[in-house]
Structures are given as C-alpha cells and as structure tokens.
Image (cartoon, rainbow, N blue to C red; front, side, top):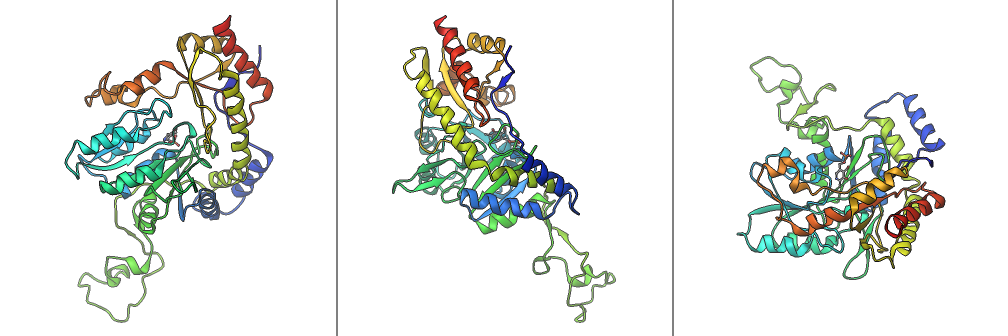
Length: 404
Ligand SMILES: Cc1ncc(COP(=O)(O)O)c(C=O)c1O
C-alpha cells in the first residue's frame, strides 16, 4: 500500500523551524516585530498598500464585515460554492446572506446573476458583495468593481485560495488577487492546506487607510493608543478628581493610558505564527509554480477523457489551491480512491443547503448550477510536494476506475 496521499498538505522546512524557534526564544510571543514584518512582506507580495494579520481567515472576514459596518438586515451577495465562513461573516453582524449562482465553466460567482439580483431590487437594497477566488481562480474583480460602484456597494474579496493568483484587466494589465485596486478589502487564510501555512492565521489587505486603521483597532478589542485620538479628557486620563476641572498643566496623556472606543475582539496572530507565515511566504512563488505544473499535467491527462465532464483546466493566473474534476459516479470514484489511499475531497457542499441556511429559507433548486456542480465535483491531490510518481498514481487510479 502506498503512503496516504491527501488532497492538500503543508510543507515545513528547516528554515521555517528556525524562524519559529528563534521567535520563541525572543522577548515576544505575541504582538512582537514579526507581525509587522509579515504584514509588510505580504502586502508587498499581493501588491496592496496595507495588510493586517489576524488569527485566522474567518476572523479576517468578521473584521471586514465589522469595518464595513454590516448591520442587522443588511443584504450581502456571495457564492454558494465556498467555505461557509465567506457567508457566515455577514450573519455574525446580523446581516442577510443572498446567494447567487455560479458560472458552471469557472465555478465562480456569476456576475450576470449578481447583476440580475441588483436590477430586480430598488437601489440600496444590497450593501455589498463577497466574491471568492474559488480553488485559486481569480475573479474578474475589475468587472465586479464596476458593478459595485454602479450600485454603491462595497466588496470583500475572499482570496483564501489565491495568494499569488491574478487576472488580466481590460487593458491587459496583470491584477493580483487582493491588491485592493477594485475590492475594498481582501482576505487570506494560512490554514495548513493553503498556500502559506502558519497553523491558524489570516490576513486582510486593502488600499484604504481608514479601513486599515479601523481593522487594527477592531483586531485588538477596539482599543486606541494614540494621544491625538482620545475621547476622554486629559484630566480624566491622569486621574484628576471628579470635578474634572480643566487643568492647563496637564499636557500629556500618561503612558499607561488607552481607550476602548469600539466593540472589538482579540483576533491577533501570535509572533511565532507570523514568523512561520513570513518564512513560508518566501517560498510562495516556488509553490505556485509547482501547483501550476501539477495542474497542467492533470489537464493533459484528462483532456481527452469522455468521463471527465469538466475540470479546473489551465487558466492564466490560476493559483490552484484545488484541482477540481467533474465526473459521473463521483461517490464511486471517491470511495475507490480512498481504497487506494488517495484522499480526494469535495469542495464544496453548497453553502445554501447547509441546514443552518436551509432554516433561513434556502432550498434545493434555488441555485441549479451550484447544485449540479456539487453532484459531480471532486478535488484531486494538489500541493507543491506531491511527487510526479504520486500524481501518476492518482491519474492512473482515476482512469482505471472508469476504464477498468
Ligand atoms: C474560501 C475560504 N474562506 C474562508 C476560509 C476561512 O479561513 P480559516 O479556516 O483560516 O478561518 C477558508 C478556509 O478554510 C476558505 O477556504
């Protein structure tokens, strides 16, 4: 029996271990210098102005929804073919999730379906859109950006699957996922199956300074530590008596002083996780290159096979977090591969048909493309350290299931 082949796997090198250990030996376990270093390096990598590292991708989404002021009843559009967190962040703030169907070719949120929803409702009905660079394929964020400005909506780009991914804009310029040129905010996850692993971890990128500052504050309990931004009088801060008589001699806030000005959270990443993330980021381009090689080989192997109804394919700018094929008898193939120690996975069970969302009124038949996709999709092993032999074995087993 071969060693188990998972659908995704992290790769921790000696350099990664050294980066973590040296941080553990330093003065900081959390809120140390590695966080700012990782943020700067990541912003640089995706070509955004600002980056805020957080405890995981879900926290990143929650903070984005808070920073954009999602409130009770606000309607936000997203895709059903994603991890539930892309939608749940709206619910955390009391908003309403409206799922729009996917494009069956790209598996991404179909902009035409989003436009139809917007056209069918009075302007102002919807507040935002959360497109997802599903599987690593970049959404055409320029087109979504235009639609969003037409309807005065914000955009959170869920780029968890696509660090380093890109699309080409109308002028044929490369636009990296999460670069902030079209979306207000973008988020990433550093869960171990993702391109960059930090254990748990996430990042928000943006070009908007106000949102950036708001996110920093919300990440740490809504606390502000800035003399120029305090709301309480300087006399109070210094511990003056209750009369609060203005005292011109008090000109500085004491060093201990801080204010909680908003209801925030503790969504900080630790310094040693940031060290791991930063170390992994240095190899991100190599990983991406290897993922693209693997995708090309899958594509060529299955291109002519009539039992492959669809596949991720070879797409410029695709970051290949996943390689999806669509097949009949998906359950049979899945179980057959498991018997061969190949642990393929299904991405995703449509979000709107999760019991939680069914209870909110969603039902089968609402989003036929997503539901049809779910019946056929299966994600094959895709990670940079997958060997050629392992990939050949996977391809061979897929073929032998159908060809006998
Ligand atoms: C598309 C998408 N969005 C959000 C998340 C949430 O990220 P995390 O697991 O780091 O909370 C994930 C990760 O599984 C994801 O795949």
